[in-house]
Image (cartoon, rainbow, N blue to C red; front, side):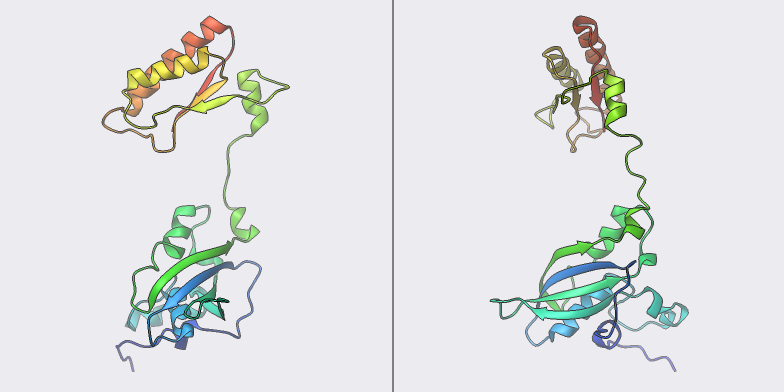
Length: 230
């Protein structure tokens, strides 16, 4: 029958006999176990908490196929020169992750594994993403040639910059900076990755002032200009 309670992760998630598949996502973690915790248990804990495991046995475990969906710690090796550190290699089946979602993948692999008792320290050292997963990402809608066609710039590198300071400018002053850059000779300007629609500069206001700056710079230079908004 069903029996609740805490059990060692390594009983289920440490599988040194496992042979990795070409479609597996493979991760290498540097783990520092808590005193008294075997490295196999620490590696298995990482595999469990980043996939199908929880801290205790639950009856709903019987409603899924753990062998199909669980992460597996398939190899442990000591870190040379570090007596208490190990590299734990974990394989994840592709079906654990939403297609084309970096957020979903990293939420499991690096977002859900840093807060449990078996480990004193943990660091993701390496990650192998198979073509079967990377091909699910659509990527940019077009490449450099389309950008050149839109800007009518050929035969030389495109010249652009990010507006600084990246945060704190009003939309009007942001647009002023865009104009000065484009009027001064740049092909395009762009938002910093931190810029979105903060209280000091809402997206709609930024769009309007950047558009005004762009059209003004185009009229004065006779060249096509661009600005990339987040």
